[in-house]
Length: 493
Image 1 (cartoon, rainbow, N blue to C red):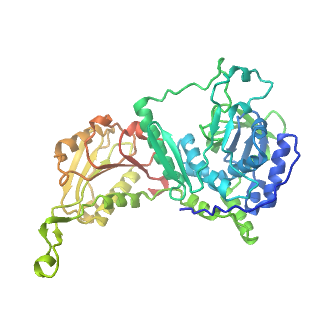
Image 2 (image 1 turned 30 degrees about the vertical axis):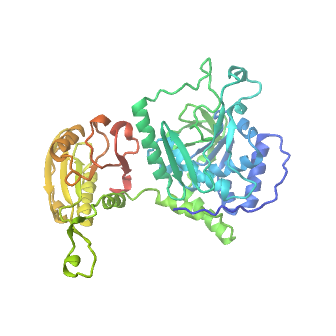
């Protein structure tokens, strides 16, 4: 995990007398270029575009750093420098390819926590991450919208900036989530946060309060993730067309906003190469920012090792294997040794593996799932396993008291219809839930593509732990209702 040096460099602050937002941006860019070879190299390859079509700032995967001049006016110069660095780090840390179909809202938060920490604690004292902002300040002074916002309305937004120890608390309904960016990568933060939100939305609905003004006008910051000061747009979300001026192209953003950019800024640019060159450039000068190399390494790893995680969960649930009801062989054979517990051979790890064999699961993914079943046996030779194949119904059940890895070399696949987990959990409840902690399943592992239906939470069997191993980042607890999601990335099968 990334470990950060929270000691800032001391840099003499300069007094810029810029009058326009563009001058502020250019002065801050110039300052960053003098202050950090790594950050300046990245910034030189980005295209700055002023536009009032977005509420604050945004970054496109092609390297367009879009900024609203009203937002720049609302920030201090240190904060302007901080948000410039924030935006280019989305490119350097591969926020776009790492997203892989995840919801932009929660993914932006998960990446913002790491990036804002770096900006706040690992850059010079002339840069800082914005902490909060009155969104009224984003409304032009000559706009009549200012008069439509009640004076008592709370328009203060606090941004996602972790504490100095790397922790950050987010409330989701009655849940209080505590993240630690020194221990959790963005992918893990995303899954925990998204699962909690899906669970909350599933129980309480997701209607929320409207952010529109009295006449349906856009309120300041509408469209932004609450607590974020920017949006990030992947290339495949943007529609490109001819601009109104020669040498310009028009970008249509997901919310329908249109922004004109220089045509040559759309030339293919490999940001991994740009980042590698920036890293080499800064290393040669002996001035790589503290913590950035760990962050770059984490972004290249970009996922949880799902197979390793399964084994960790199983290992945590292995029974102690000892009982005080029977003395150990050492106790019986040596009167000088105190009473020790003996091994309780009846305590075994009980695992139910549920394999989705519906038609929506590709042969390649099914092969990956069955390979992991063999891997579970290889790592846990004393386990008792029940292997359930299903589509919309339970199709085949195999029980193993001492399974061998070779048992899964050739598995007779049954199913290939639709997908439901309701019959699976009904089967487990009727056949494997006696209410005894010694015989009931310890872990239920569902290997599925996620396109399924599950019982309501109150109707679930009461086994200890349920894992969902799925390749789909759009499926969450709103569909699965209970358990823990672990994602399989497409390049792993």
